[in-house]
Length: 199
Image 1 (tube, rainbow, N blue to C red):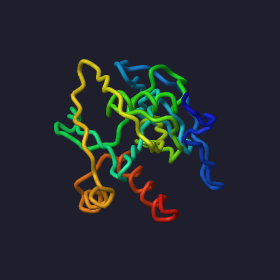
Image 2: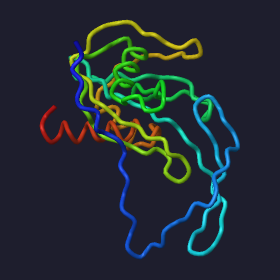
Image 3: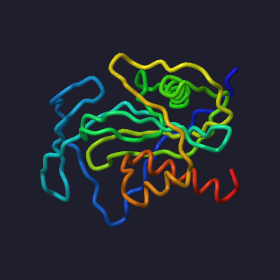
């Protein structure tokens, strides 16, 4: 049976600076609704001035740093339409429904994308991916003691699973060849954990 840590993780709010005036939202108007996001136009009052701000709502997602028995990380290579190219990323996916516990999403996406599962996930970090105009939040978990299973990809998904040494992934990051924000942050966080306690 899966051992689940208490679901208390989410990218938290930060306190407004003492000398920064509050922003007042006057109106929020839905402009577009897609399969994974909603786009709004916000009318706000900022320092006495009215402005229009774009806002994109995303229900959230979870991601996993998956470490195999030999210490290599399981990565997924897939096509990203927004960039019109293939990218190397950690396994990740959106919540199935608003409010789904992110750790449940992480268990599911790990198995669906890589064909491996785990009995326990460890919390690693939380991210807000695009803070200027989108509220997408991602919790990232660490998976060890991977158990072979089967991939369960969506009909429109084509994913190749690859094993990578941590040092080689760090080389990709520092050479600017890996640019996916959640993947970069998660690998660096994992590397810090390895350097601090050896695992």
